[in-house]
Length: 318
Image (cartoon, rainbow, N blue to C red; front, side, top):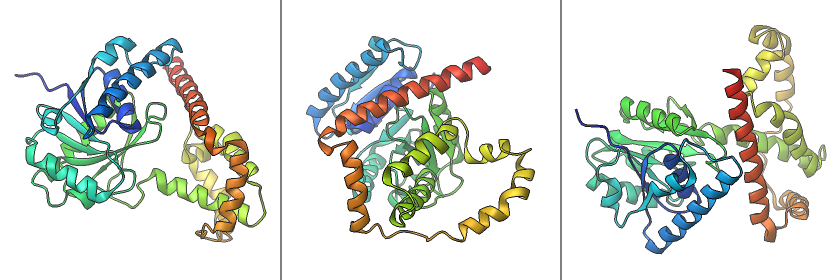
């Protein structure tokens, strides 16, 4: 019996594509990186090598291979055919344009065999919107990472109604192998899961600011120094379970209060320019737009430290 392919193809060498390349190389896969602008591939490979070495120096490198070994696993690809041929799995990372994704998947459909999984990194388009008319549509799926993927391990796996169940299982297994934390949506839904939950939080923060209940700073602090502290290790359902003698007692005690408070919610805000100006002024005072690159690095460093803490804590509890 022949050995299963260990080749991974990545389409797009932007920030998401680079993160995927690093993650798959950390998992020991043979990674082939393609971009329609070939000069960007060289820039991406150089940046990836720098990032891997920096992570290694800080003790934050993922995987069992060292930085040099991981970088050596990532190779440039000159054509889509080169990326796809013989690959176990291909991860598309082009811009968030459904027509562009539809075009890319149409091209892939013309050259792929009946084994390679075709996954999209889209954050908002259900796979049925760009794979319906494809011959190999049963091999298509969404694997949506959270930005920045190297430091935030959640991956939403969303099959189309026609995606083969084995494709879903294999996609989840691949994400597990590279150290990500996949969740599978049993059916398509607008916004997937993460953004639906994120939007609910953002909507209520916005309403509290607009109604003069909280300042912008204090609204963020509620999450960063309150709920976020718990949610870094526990989900909201696990939190409820631990905050009482189990789920049954929690909702027996608090369901009526949840319903009463929820009935006072204003609903979806309009995101008016007036409130946007207030929020922007407060955030720009702390994080000037000209310094966002510095602040993203600040964010990524702290997420890397948190990710390492979580991994170390999990090892200690084994």
